[in-house]
Image (tube, rainbow, N blue to C red; front, side, top):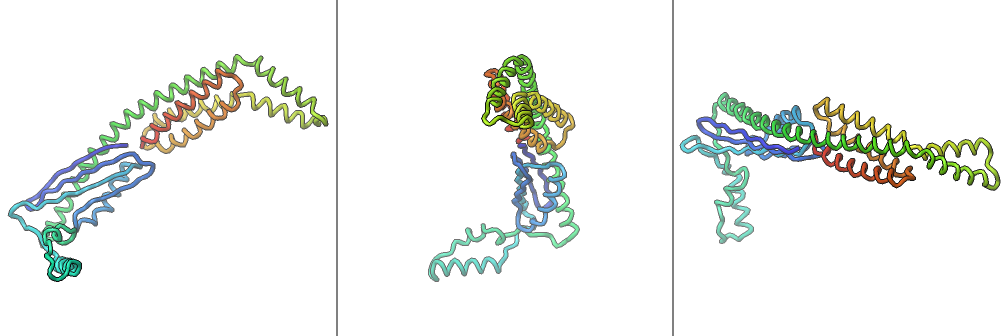
Amino acid sequence: MTGFGRGDGGDAQYVWSWELKSVNGRGFDLRCRLPSGWEGLEQKLRSAITERCRRGSFQSALSLRTLPGSAGVQVNQALLEELIALARNLRGSEGAVDVESLLAIRGVVEPGEPEDEELRERRREAVLACFVTALDELVQARASEGEKLTALIRSFLQEIERLVGEAASVAATQPAALQARLTAQLEDLLQASPPLAPERLAQECALLASKADVREELDRLQAHCDAALALLQQGGAVGRKLDFLCQEFNREANSLCSKSSDIELTRLGLELKSQIEQLREQVQNLE
């Protein structure tokens, strides 16, 4: 499911902003982009998101800017000198070194942190509170999309139920055709040489009858519809369970098509497969 959230804040020295995005994903994946010195927040971010979202691909970014006239920045002098030496070695001792480019490298210039540990911790908590604001906004966006997806999924399930009912009506009007088919197949068995043993003949007859009867597939399709609707009514993170049900839907529809000896029943089976595929595509977007 897709979503976006933003949270802004600041204090006397810094202003900061969170951007949190999510797109569809079969599992859970989080990528964080954090300023130098703030990497320790990643585990807290991961825990906060997984408490409220079960699956999706998430991107979290924190931007931090020093206010004019505040503490300024710190330069990692040792790292800068090492980079300058490396650049001169690559260019030659007479080559000019672009210091501005070196200052843009991550870790060379860092925000000047106050020495007061208590103030640093308050800032850390304020930054995390803004992340929660962004997360709240993202979760609300995902919930809104989920409501629309649920309505769409219900419409597919209703169409599948309609097709199952129509297929059941067609199957119920075909007893004569089924009887003729079974009779012809039974005659072939009776004329087999050498003749089949009575026990084997009974087994073959039972097998032919079961292959011609599609009631079991139709009953299972209806049961899967009922289960899917119950999951939607239950709410919560039901996307994975619905994804599994779509596999079962497809299995029964394939079996229905393979058993069918009637053009109309085959048409309905193929239409069922089309609806089930569209249902599966939408279910994979649901958390």
